[in-house]
Amino acid sequence: MGTKKNLSDIAWRDFKALPLTEKGAYFQGSPAHTLIAQQFSREKIEELCELATKIKRMNKRRDGANFLKSLLSDKRAMLYFAQPSSRTYLSHNAACQILGLDTMDVRDSKTSSEIKGESPEDTIRTFSSYVDMIIMRHPVGGFAERVAWMMAHTGREISVLNAGSGADQHPTQALLDIYTLQRSFEKIGGIDGKHVAFVGDLLRGRTVRSLAWMLSLYKDMTLYFIAPESLQISQDILDLLDKAGTKYVVTQDFASVMPIADAIYMTRIQDEWDVEGEGSTTEACDYHIGAEHMDTIKDTTVILHPLPRRQEISTEIDNDSRAVYWRQMRNGMWIRAALILTTFGRQEEVNQHYAEYKPEA
Image (cartoon, rainbow, N blue to C red; front, top):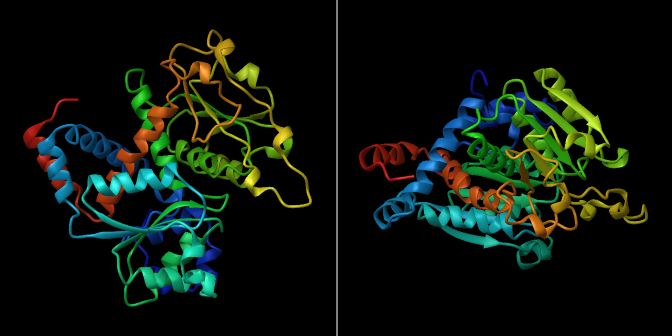
């Protein structure tokens, strides 16, 4: 990412105006922040994936699990979830527990002083007095970035992890998606050269936005964006792919892509972002994959979904080996544990322990 930069040296209006790929340079200092997908290099992603696998294997044995629980027993984290969540909240909380990291949480702003008129910024600055990390999910896009910038201008700067920000970014989801793809393709050449299809509500799917950019870090990729015109991927993501030289196809024809896709990433309608008075988008997208399609897709194709799902994936295929969305959810716990550990700079303790004991796969 080039020379490390300090958030405290830049005004908010100037920082906000920076291109996403330039913002990443500000998140590599101390403390480290995870705010946007564009801050990760392929090398860093692969390091996190390797560490996640080591943590997963070590945690299978009591001695390994007890060792992991000692690593961050001196730290505390606040889970500030101002937007409804179950999977993302529980996944981050489980990751903290694996590492012995004590947690406290606010899962509804109505239970905080915000109900009394306190600003979200003041609420979070209050939390920072008690913890060493804030893991946050917020309905306002870019809010996690603003929090990191704000904390850099206080006397107590702490790490911020973005667990979902508006409809624009979900970097830890993208990491678990990459980890799932890496594990799924490890016997067939890895992620490079694969055809990945994104299907559904792509305009407002922050998971798709973050993952599409991360996949641009891999060689000879072809991405397919399959959606009705009103819900198609936004131009800013296509511009980033153009700049990275990543091939893509924008289409509404799921049937033609299905036989050639190596990964199919289904998404639900994001109707929580519907604007009152403009009507619902629920009827605008009816893409579906089910038992009738299993002979059409390749034997090595994997089907992913960030969940929750609706009608877009039939429960009939849940036990098909190519349906990896439940494994995908569990992978989130391991990659987030790796990310949290790396944020605190304790990853080498795992690497050393793993090298000495070499737990079985």
